Length: 120
Image (tube, rainbow, N blue to C red; front, side):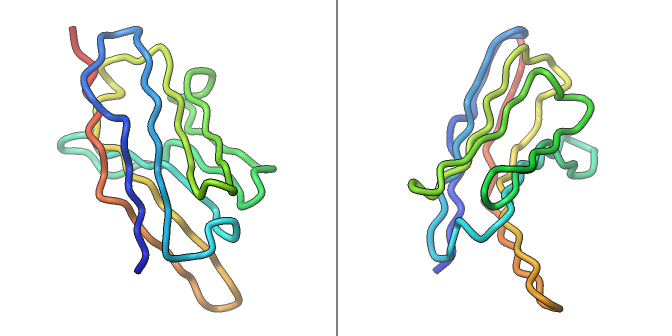
């Protein structure tokens, strides 16, 4: 049974930090590209950050570059998102995504999401 379980969300003041975690099970984590997406009320889901299976390639949305850091620990089947200098525009539900493309087949899994609210 595939599971992606996010944790670490919550309420934080502007300028504060949070660290999100996504614990994976039920699939070979080290084979999958892992990403964090977010969806704010009334907006489409957007890619925040992505990390390749071995961690060698990392991409960020322009809006979070220099503030957020994605990392993974393949021994722990966990991906992280360190978020610093948070502002109100970062308020959203954050989702963990696992994706693998093998030939013509694509495998993708989503977590249930964790709420991040930035407010004073």
